[in-house]
Length: 323
Image (cartoon, rainbow, N blue to C red; front, side, top):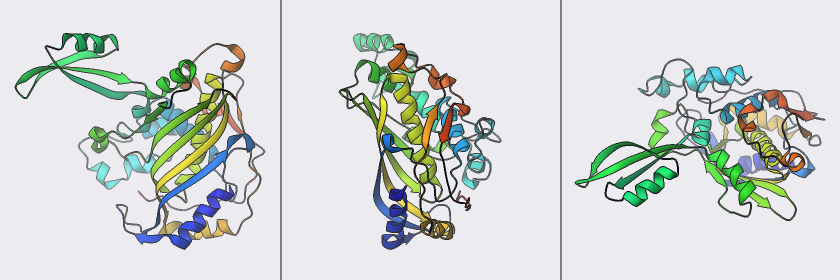
């Protein structure tokens, strides 16, 4: 994880102090990139302990489209508790549906993206084509004085990525995202890691992931998100017959909270250990071995299906999360 520590140094050396919505200043650097070869090891931070059980608990929650902090807690992940129940703006929001509610966060967008089409009633061919693609009519509305049919379907973006890796792996359109302008006000926290693109090498049967993060808390969020993205790459590769390879991590606003400075300066004094290895449970089917495409395992995996082998780390370090 030398690349991670180099990023921390760059922010300390080149960042500037900024105010933000949390009330806790950040030392911020616009534009950053980290790249890891997953065949050389798993990108787990070693200069402190990575909360790996929480990482995989959150990922499994996303895969199941969980929208409640209680659902994440049941999977061993408590990182959503504060955003659900201590975020002042969210507590006052008319969209909040009681304790632990998060709104349509990450996994809901990944697995149940709300897609609409507004078509003139007279466009019968287009309406028919949309219905054949799974859209259903939910109403008729006037648009510029002309009656239009309103159609809707929930799109499983992640499943569509797996389908494409099986049937059209050369595509450069195998991606999903979580930024939904129409629903931002309905969420406890708008998505930070928002665009995932899978790229398959058909000759070597290697799968790579590019992940774009619009805003990243480098002290707490980056190690967590790196691990989560790498686990997802391994899982998708297993289910589609590829080997995980490159994981490239782009950050828009890379920042260190003022309350995290001491924790990160301590990490810079520590020598990183070698990267561990991620092990997936044998119960998760490997398409390369079985020849059977079983995407339903996106919902069937459990946190215990993922373990780190040979993970050595320095003493744990803690810092408060800015909400």
